[in-house]
Length: 474
Image 1 (cartoon, one colour):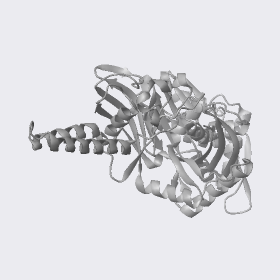
Image 2 (cartoon, one colour):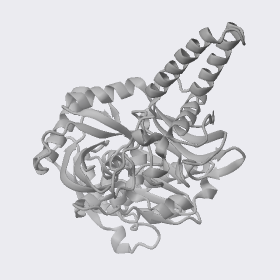
Image 3 (cartoon, rainbow, N blue to C red):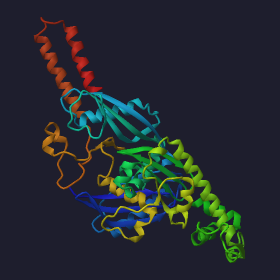
Image 4 (spheres, rainbow, N blue to C red):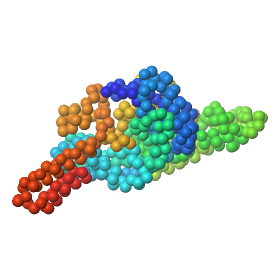
């Protein structure tokens, strides 16, 4: 079934909105909107009214461009890593039937969440399975349709502070939009720029924006690690403003015009050493001149410090040795010349590349800029490009179709077939139906109890009933 997706990236520099029609699993971009971020600090909402106005303006621009999309009011929204905490957890489910279905996988995921002991003031936004084990067989890629008695799942769980989520929801609602789903920004970026080969080999995606750095490590089937660092390109602007004694807008222009990290150093010519640039003086209408090498030194110092911290995070992840595909850099700061060479200094013996966005219809040159990777990832996420059996922020499971519908007769009612699609529709674990089935089962057993009271005591019979019920639920 074709659908229209509204993706909203709430970035620290700008609000990006993309509207896309999904046809046969592929997004077709039909509208784009942008607006300067307001009411946000390092990705966190600090003024609901200002932030909602910026979001509303960006959405309105995208709708004007996308004909026929005026009525769309549900969005997939990014959330900054500043809100989140993550941890690894595993869950086991003792299979009652003869075959593994989505219900058994969902129960194992629920048990993994329970075992994670998520604090009461946090909500789960992603449960990402990266490995399954069935009985004594390890490294099961996809347990669906297999036979076994003990299903174990290993997951990476991303949680967000409940109060921050509520502020985000209120901000979106005030902008006239409802939240359809919430996706971690670094996860969305990785979806838009990583190839399947890179994911299988192991890769770290680093997204550096205006005020934040976000790291996501993908190893095998899903995300294994993510973290957040509150520094971005705006800090370079601030450093330049203070050092050059000029206003922030002038410092930003200097950064964009002269922010070439391949310049500077011992190999510079004497002519470059003596080059002067004119900047307005802070607080008056005058101007003054500064040497270009001084500008380069300020920029380089902040970039070196940033990558030094990022390299430490990669070391602390415990997954550095598994990054066969190395490092992929994305985000607005990647427009700075020479930044790849700086990164290679810190990630020794690893491939390092600047991201290239996965192609889709309607993608034009400006949208290929690394600063748009998150919003494009949101659109891909809505089209079904997510981790197999991931449980999302709405507690639904995204199931990648690997078998024909006829192979799963036991729950064809909950797996609607979509021709020519790589992914099934996102579906519920259907716990309500399970509850009804169990309730009816208990009623039937109670009726049998009243008839068959001679062969076994009522107390023993009741114990058996509730034991079986508990096993199915837990």
